Image 1 (cartoon, rainbow, N blue to C red):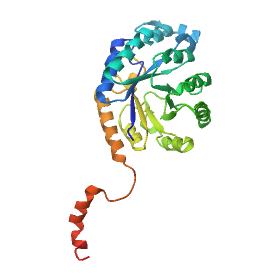
Image 2 (tube, helix red, strand yellow):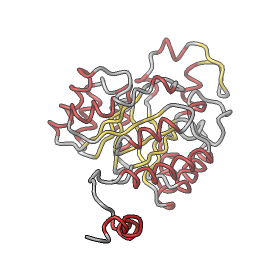
Image 3 (cartoon, rainbow, N blue to C red):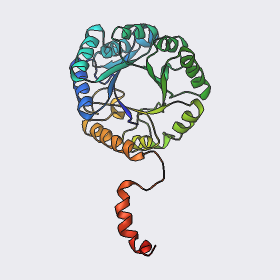
Image 4 (tube, rainbow, N blue to C red):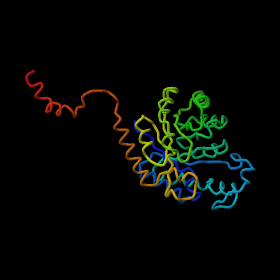
Length: 280
């Protein structure tokens, strides 16, 4: 089964639609199946106190200026929608509030995403589940009890979903990955399980691919030295190309697990074992 590879643009576009388009093109050229963005209603997701607090950024000296500078609106998302259709790649976004989810609905994206931070927002995940679109649910920062609640909501709504094992640290240390959780989630919920990685390298994602994940999400960037909290845990073009190529090979190499003689082994067997069976 092919692994569905998602290139997480997130907010690495830094509020620039041209950077966003470059990242979409980068994902398409690498062979990714989809690109993902993030959508927030700033005044609903953050408190006034936080928004009024100080933060130096290219857009000003407050948290509000920084967060508004990173947020795309209707004009930008129309361009994203048009450009993705032009290139032939799927796009979707993780909404961080109900208003943002309703905003995204107008584009009729094929997929939805529940970010790790939002898996405990019951009103939001009920809204997402009501759309009955295939939904990727990240499980970072969550207990099994919290995941139980989310899974039950999606099952009750009849909404198709898969979980994505995640550790929400940026960047994630390799030793914190705990990839065996992929098996735990698969056995507990009897569903497909993917992996959303925030590590700096490729080895952990390769290992996840070998564990039978059905989806893989990694942040992407044009240059890790660019402004932004997610840039350091993102893949540049060369890294993304390597990831996609290797993951496609790993998925093919895993096979079906049946122990038998492969048809291509038959002539080799006759050659190497001929002296054993020649008198039979």
